[in-house]
Image: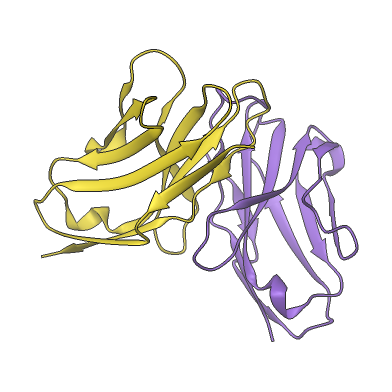
Amino acid sequence: AQSVTQLGSHVSVSEGALVLLRCNYSSSVPPYLFWYVQYPNQGLQLLLKYTTGATLVKGINGFEAEFKKSETSFHLTKPSAHMSDAAEYFCAVSDPRGNNDMRFGAGTRLTVKP
Amino acid sequence: EAGVVQSPRYKIIEKKQPVAFWCNPISGHNTLYWYRQNLGQGPELLIRYENEEAVDDSQLPKDRFSAERLKGVDSTLKIQPAELGDSAVYLCASSFVAGPSYEQYFGPGTRLTVT
């Protein structure tokens, strides 16, 4: 079975500082990996995804993530945090052989301080 | 393009009462998903439809939960009777087809509180 673990349920950074949200996965096959963002009282929005090919994936709003097979990680980064980045972030994994049934992590709440 | 529409956005009911949630997916999307998101957790899949067929309902508590997708478009998720532990956000998502390469688009969810 596939699963993801998000390290840190809450992360707080200052505006302009580096954002690093951690995600480790468990999968018996090369997985597809996703990062979603959820703003208050809204649904989830896809930030970026890794399927195959280049391991450094760029997404919307200046976010990027790197697939590291040796570390079973898919951490999300952004060089400079904005106040508007404050939200809940979810990492998810799916089996490329399946039907897009994703397994989500518990989420990381990002707070951005002025 | 309109997104996934869900109603109601909020619902408060007493335990043992029935409740229903409605979802209208993005036009042309043949795959529809219902997720439950408990407080402080990520979404968990309840059921997936491909057109009008429920192809994966293994996580749906069938003793009290039911779902339907008539005509392969709108869908309704029902709980009868509701229990205190059903308090959660119920998310609907849709994708063009089923498959890991196709993005799932999520609605805003229905926040259910059972008292």
